[in-house]
Length: 288
Picture 1 (tube, rainbow, N blue to C red):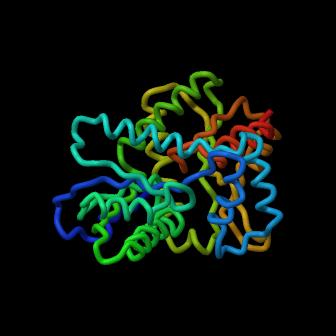
Picture 2 (tube, rainbow, N blue to C red):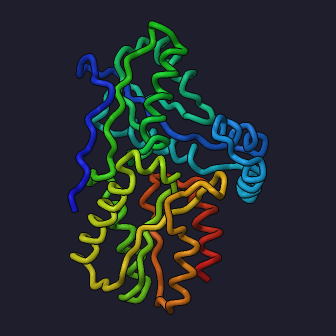
């Protein structure tokens, strides 16, 4: 299979003399009072049914209204700040919850930052996973005004060894607890098919799964089968989304009498509700 060619940084940097790193992420609520405003931010302009928001709000309620993603971003930034190769200040701005991108870019301007690199915690191409973040960054710059720093987004990192190797290591560890012929379900956030067809999202996910499987087969005695599946769809039921759904796939494996299954969430680099509820709670219940 031909692997997608990674995109270059966007937009082209005015120079390579970067004076800051900006970590950009999705954001998540950090208490019960944050849940509804956060979900309104996430779904603004997307025509998501109110009943779906109510269901998702209940999911957050099971965890005290707290998503793990913000705390994991703090831990990521702390690790970056401690890295000896980085000697620039690190900033953090989110799409949907505090710290919001416009406020962060304004602080960067006030600190005298002129030319920053942006690392987005989304590994793949798609509108919501890549292009929308570019739009968010540019909208934040426009809101700050002509003195806003230039910001260059780093390329998608789905095929970077720093992403592939930890995923392979974690899968090898999980398979070590299962029979040698256990199945693997690689899972990622589903997208409307129309959105997926306009990007390399599916091809990149398949490339990542293939690279991980090659590593696992080369280093273990695993002899099972694998499948790319999807999760966390939302929106009107008549709109086609990427399938198969992971819960349906787990039921199929159970009916087939599979000896075990390892679920590898390659679509995510951080835990949030799509992991701690959709996988750890709902999908795990289907697997029992």
